[in-house]
Length: 238
Image 1 (spheres, rainbow, N blue to C red):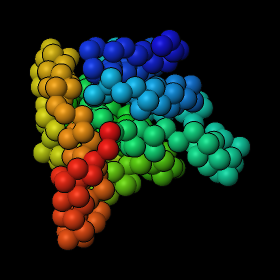
Image 2: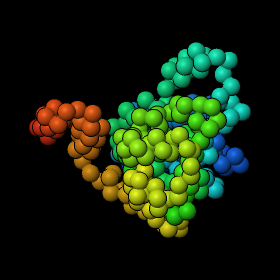
Image 3: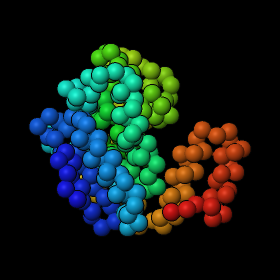
Image 4: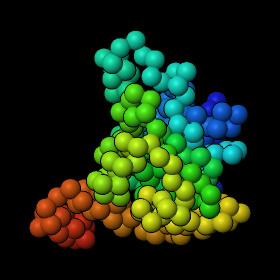
């Protein structure tokens, strides 16, 4: 598959998706959104894929939205129509394979939001995270108001969204935004090892675990336990 703003490759049973606008620190533009939407559909429809990795080319994972395009829609109504006609974030969240984010350099705005929609987040030492939208006169629009409280708690989410302050990888790990931190030179090898280990698991079990956790987190405990019991008894579907 050939794209303008991303690169896609399969390494065994793992799909690797690289944000590929390194000259602008992989700033997220409309073309990138559309191409990620397309590649997420390809991952969804490919039964050979057991895990997907998202990473960035060059010096950053993603420096946030390209403000020469986003934030300039003719009206909020038009912006909502465009988003829901091609909702990348919903499609990404619905994938039934583990999503891994390999993070380095700058992870800003929609870069943070993309990472938060992944199941595992591996960050290189020195990576910087920031959500600046409120200070640009916008509410985060790619899920941070919903995903960050679920990952790090309401207090941390409000603090980071409202202040827009930057946090480094070690603090992000303490705040549970990052799963673990590795030396920069180990990022690709560590990510490869994790992806390969997930690919060796029974895909039906993995799909069941993902469904149990993601759906169960918002259920009362009793209902969550019932969901787990149904899935463990064979209710998970690939």
